[in-house]
Image (tube, rainbow, N blue to C red):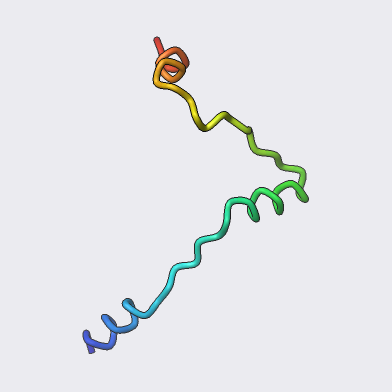
Length: 51
């Protein structure tokens, strides 16, 4: 019985949605995501999170 469970786990695939599709469908519902610059330098991050 264990061998069939292992075979099923190996054969399954996990669905991973594309973020662009999620953003588009959210816009139809009136939701918007913040757009932040992805290429921040370490100095920018230190300044942002400094206490």
